[in-house]
Image (cartoon, rainbow, N blue to C red; front, top):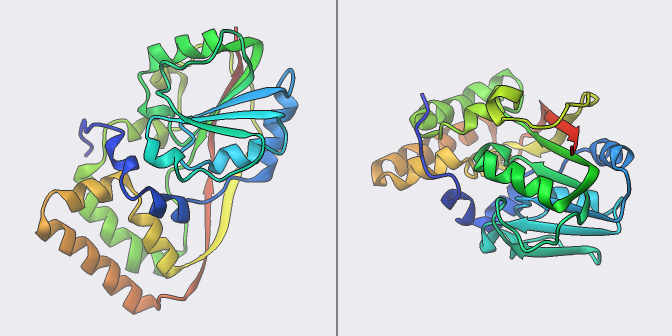
Length: 255
């Protein structure tokens, strides 16, 4: 069960932890975005967080405008000479009309006021610009790791997921995100990383539902930490883990 919680406040909290725990995206994704873009002068990475996608885009575009509604997030932005970070809402920016060859959104489309956001995309994008949003739901870690460490926390935080998460879990379907452009087929992309049991615990702590559950009271916060501690004790904090998850991609050219 999910509830209608406010979307953004959890991502401004402990933004340094978010920067350390969240994985980078596959290089092949950014190569594909660049290939599909009509030019490579400017790209807007909307809801950049601390710049996981922006640094991938910076290898292919001359200028990356990386924005996030949370100043705390962009303050953790990974620096590159051709990335400019700024705190701006997705639905209303300071950018000039027709400025971008591509607009990207990583792991955030489901949080936006979608009608207002699509209007903004059409305003700031050049005709034919590429729009590409992507996200991931659940990592696969292997049976014992999930049973000992991830599943107990999932059970505790289940009531605290916002309704918006369902849009991502269902794969960013056109009907759910009101996708306004003709879709183009994207290749299959998968996010893979080598981590440890303690790294998984750090990642789980960045879940918005985890933060909401922990903020609901001392007993809930203690139960979450106890579940993680028990899992880490069973597995060993330094146990190496291979984590894999597919990416849901929604892409099209702006019309």
